[in-house]
Length: 391
Ligand code: APR
Ligand code: PHB
Image (cartoon, rainbow, N blue to C red):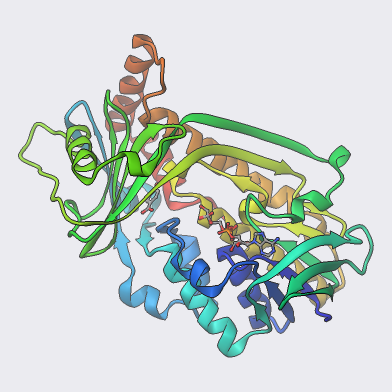
């Protein structure tokens, strides 16, 4: 097989990249190791920054997003039984976010790719990227029980944290920056209308809790748990009771319960792989960086990377200049590190680290009080949450 851009992975990064290239008249092939159902059902992120929603609309993938997505103009911070709303448009000159699950973004992009785009091969596992430092890289992959080769002009590794593309960059040229956190999130989906019309981020002495949603009738909630927790170790009643404790307030707010339809634990990690490019191999999304989910940046960073790559390749096609391709890693990492800083700040602001000292606990409350009482501090949060500029 031969194509201009070989894309490894059909998560949000790979699928959106294929769509952006198709719209620019550049051919690609997407190799996805899992089946379509896995990609479309995997519960991941749920918050689209303003820029992400705009890119999806411009790519022709905004119709259901505009019909079913929920525009949110703020979030609530909850601490010490108090409630503080952060007003995004007032603090950012009009920006908001949209609640629209990553599963739905993937369904929309897969449907478009299968209808209009180039080859999207499911159950096609990339085995290796070869010749990344040459001008004719190739991807060896296995599909339908036999090995094959995809000859490319460029390869973009959109294969997530556990993918193989990264391994094609020589270790001696690589720097990795990472931090793991001694806790994770127990996430649930529940068939019950959300108990608040916006997201609620709660800092509590017992640990962090988050109220999110997937639709007016489906709630998505998270509970900080010790690292290595088994989701099945928590009964539904125990989960609801713990959430109620952590969302407690001085007013008459209550948390509505309902049947839990999905339960899983997500580990927390910060990770950045530098550089994000080696020769004709480019990394995008979770293949290059991971953020703790507290700041809802993961999907949006993946979007920023593939927008940057597509723009750079179009620029090269139109002008013959490789300057934007050569700046790809630097351009992406500027945004990645701002998102890493924001996600780390949100995580350390709201989670109770095992062994946290009374001093550190008071420091958290002082940081929250600062945000609640300073427009400057509140603006920094609102700008980070609604998104950093692309490129
Ligand atoms: N060959 C082919 N496909 C692969 C391979 C491989 N060797 N290894 C992994 N994949 C596929 C995975 O099955 C997955 O579908 O690559 C895809 C990577 O998708 P994601 O992990 O979703 O990564 P990305 O597209 O960068 O999206 C980042 O997803 O993980 C969340 O929170 C994260 O919201 C963020 C978003
Ligand atoms: C989600 O709805 O899955 C979600 C929302 C906000 C976050 C993380 C996850 O910060």
